[in-house]
Structure formats: C-alpha cells, structure tokens
Length: 112
Length: 155
Image (cartoon, rainbow over all chains, first blue to last red; front, side, top):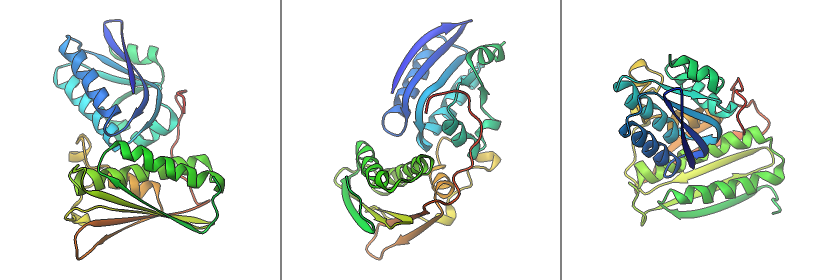
C-alpha cells in the first residue's frame, strides 16, 4: 500500500492507496499513524477513497489507530470510503464508533 | 483459462502472508469463466483471505515450514473452499462475538464473523491427527452481502 502524508487545517492527512490487508497494508498503516503521532500530530484524517480492499487485519489496524489517537486526546477521522470498505465496517458496527465522513471537507470540519 | 465444471483444485502453500495473494489469484481465475457476478466474487475472495489468515497465523503460528492445504471444489452452481492447517485446533464456540460492546474496539477477532457473513455456510472439522479444516460453502446466484452507501471512492 502507498501512503502519502500532507497537512490540512492543522490535521495530518494520510492518503491511502491500495489494500489494507494482513502482512502489508496493515503494517504500513500502523507505521504511518505511529510516525505521524510521533511527529506531534494530534488529529489525523485517513483518506480512504483509493483503498481497494480491506480485511479483518486492516479493520483491526483502523481500530488500533483510533485508539492510539484518541488516547492522546486527538481525533481520527475517515473519509471517502468506497462502498465495500464502508460495508466491511458496517457489518461489524464500527461505523457507530469511528468518525466517518463523506468527503475531506466534512472530515476536516468534524475536527473543530 | 478454461474452467470446466465440476472441477477440484488442490493447492499447498507455506505459511507466508504473501501466499494469500497467490491463492486468491487462483480463486479469481477459477471464478472468472463462470461469469459469477463481481460482487459475489469479491466477498468470496475476502472470506478465503480470512480463512488463510487464520490457518497461517493462529493454526500454523506463521511457521513457514508448516503448510496450508487449500481445496477449491467448483460445480456449476456452487463452490466449496477448504482450508486446512497443521495447528492444534480451537473451540469455535469459544470465539467471542465481535459485536459485543466490550469487543467492538478490539483489534482482532473479526475473521470468522466476516467468513460467516460472506459465505452461506461454514463448517469446521478437527482431525484426529491434528489440524483444523474449515469448509466455506457459497451457492452462486444467491443473495449477496448486504452493504449500502457509497462515498465516492474507487473500487
């Protein structure tokens, strides 16, 4: 998985591209979130629009990222989820826990 | 690749995550000529990935010397996916409900739940000689996974 990092309105945006699956994408996501937090990021937005697929390990990493960020008093937001990726989170009721927005503007506004 | 049915394909791979991609590619090749709708193929692929992950990670403890046996039994109207590891087995009844409030934020424990959602039937068999065999059954043309919503991302 490819991850690009940028800043917007004081938040770190991670643009994810590819698969968040066991052994590769999940590790890349974990490292990117830890690196951002280590660099001082409080609020993190995950751009999911180019995530092609996610498995239970990838879902576990999203939960771990949420816990990591919120335990430090920050917010983690997800936006642009493809239908199937959103479906995987709906099935396990994580849409009731995670902060999911339709697009980046909505996600950025949710941080304030 | 021609895909006459019925057919059975047997694969044997080491417990390395990169082999999950290999096995899924074989499943895709098997399903493609059968003109299964893309939505069903996608969810079957995720179920296969979860079964392989469980076999490699929990069954074989990621020992690359331990093998995972995969069987794809395909007929004109259904598929059975068999995944067998060399582990010591487990108690399916002891697997926690990932939807329980106390479990919602756990980072593990959703794989079997997803397999049950994405396939019609899931059965476990624990052989006398050890190892766990899971059989995932899916009838073609049946109801698909109920997911809704679209936030405009690429699929």
